[in-house]
Length: 388
Image (cartoon, rainbow, N blue to C red; front, side, top):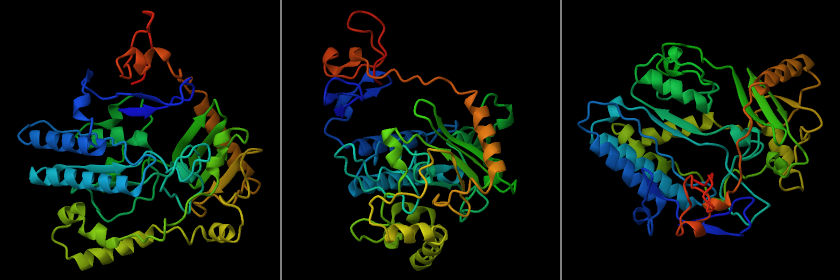
C-alpha cells in the first residue's frame, strides 16, 4: 500500500496498491516488507542468477529511498549498496563491472507548504529540489570500475543524465556515434583515459515553460531566470545546514563499510581513512562560498535570501568561481548574457509540449479493488490514462 495525493485529486489522501511484476498484480511480495529491502533482494537474486550466462547484464536499481526521508532510510540504502557489491563480488563479476550510484536531484531541505520533515542538506549551495539553482540540480554521483584509468579522480566536468546511455553503450562495445537523435554524449573514452578532454562543455539545465523558469550552462557561465510569482520560487533560497543535530560525518563508517571492505580489501584501514579524509577535503566548497556563508551567518532571516532573486532579469553566475550563485555578474558581461539567451532560445524552439494530464479519476483505487490502475479504461468504458 502507498498513500498518494495527486495535486488535483478531490480526496485529501488516496491510498492504493501500486506493486506489479511484469504487469501483473503482486502485492504479496511487498506488503509487510520495507521496499528498499525488497528491491535489494531482487537485485541480488538477478546477479546470482546471471553467474553462468554469457550475455552482459544491465541492472537498473531505482530505489524510492530516501526521497523525503530520514537517516534510517539512508542507512537502509547504504546496506542495499553493500549487498549489491557483495553479490557481484561473490559471483566473480566485479572485475568486469561498471557501478554507478547517482542522485536524481538535490534534496528537499524544507517544504513550507506541508508538514514534510526532512534531513536533506545541499549546504552551502543555493536552492533545493524543484529549483534550477545548483542545490537543486548539481547531483551527487559515484562511478567505479577496474576499467577506469584513475579510480581516485574527482570528476569536475559537466555530465548530464542523458549522457549515461551513450556512455554505457560505449562501455559495452558499441559505437555511440552511430546512435541518432540523442541529447547525451559518451564520456567513456574520457573515463578510461583515452581522451584527456571532457566531451561536454554546455548543459541545458531546464526549460519549465509552464512556470517560466529556465537555466543553461556553458563553460564557466550559468544563466538563470525564475518566476517570482510561482510558489516554488522559494526553493531557490539558501536552505540546509552543514550538518544536522550536531552529528559529524563518520569516516570510520565509510572505511569499515561493506563497499569499502570489498573494493579496497587489500588496503589498511588507517591508510584508507587518511585517503578518504583527504579526498573529501577536495570537495569542500567553504572557500569558494566563503562570502555567501559569512553573509548568511550574520543574517537574521532563515532561510537566507540571496541578493538577487533572478526574476526581473536573468542572473549570470561564474559557477567555477562562485558555485553558490551569490554574485550576479550579468551587468559586467552583457555579451555572455546575450549569447546564452540565444542558446537557450534555440533549445526552446525544440521543446516538446508538456504531457501532464493530471489525476485521472478512472484510475482511483476505489474503482479497481484497492489498486492504482495501470492505463485503465474509464469506468464508463472510455480510455483512461491511469496512474502507473
